[in-house]
Amino acid sequence: MADFEIAYGETAIHEGGYVNDPVDPGGETHLGISRVHNPDWDGWPIIDNYKSSYPDDFVTRINNDEELVKLAMALYKVRYWDPFMGDQIRDQHVANKVYDSGVNLGVGTSVKFLQEGLNLLNRNQQNYADITVDGAFGNNTMSALNAFLDLENDRPDYLLKIMNVMQAARYVNIMRADSTQEKFARGWLNRVDLC
Image (cartoon, rainbow, N blue to C red; front, side):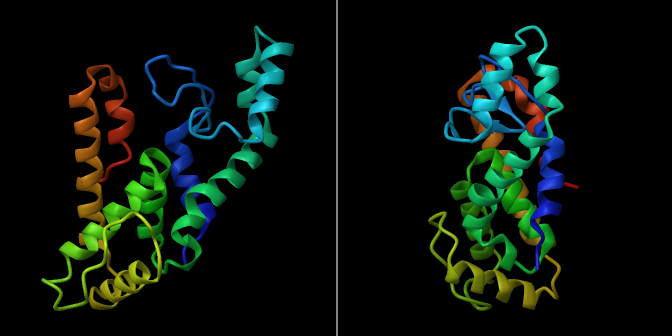
């Protein structure tokens, strides 16, 4: 079964420390946690305290605070891993992909990539029935994923490729819609494995 700490470690490489970029719709962010999307995170009061107590040095202090890392891991587990039953997915690579794209684009979007990929790879429902592409990970999605993995001898390569293509397309569409987002292209595309 998939391990959250492995997925977290891989995603953390892309997230970095404290950033407050006015062009980023997520606004103020630390360890990839956006204040806009996670205003109730327990780490924000700690960060606010650093900002008021150490205005000239708060970023260094925030980036070196181990308590904030623990709080970040707890939030990621509850909000970005548990909603798609990450602990029950038997392939670590699939769990990593759903988790990472969920952190960056939202869990519902990531699960839709998975669901659509599973539907596209079921040979017109000869291998298993289509599932609803609704972004909600439930028993039908888990059953389809397990059926796919059984048929592919636990090699999810084709599913991962489809999910990566959809993720890349989402980034391209974001940049087409708002050219100010082009500055994030390289960071986003580092999350996509098309080789």
